[in-house]
Length: 56
Picture 1 (cartoon, rainbow, N blue to C red):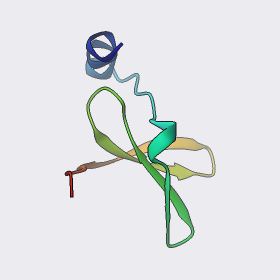
Picture 2 (picture 1 turned 90 degrees about the vertical axis):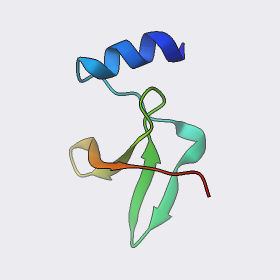
Picture 3 (picture 1 turned 30 degrees about the vertical axis):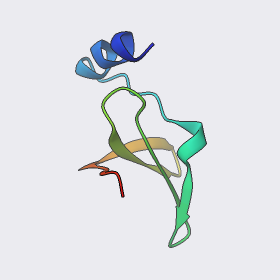
Picture 4 (picture 1 turned 90 degrees about the horizontal axis):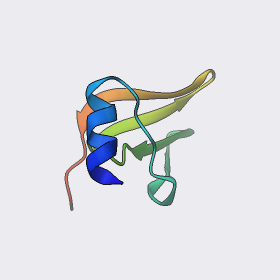
């Protein structure tokens, strides 16, 4: 799944990881399963925030 999803990420089709959803400042955050970029829930759907989440 991850290899195919990485290819999809190159074309702009990102898939959120439902197990890593976190709340912060009233917004929902997660990461893309393919590329690991951080995503935020907005009024019109999930969008990339541009940062890459690091393991902590």
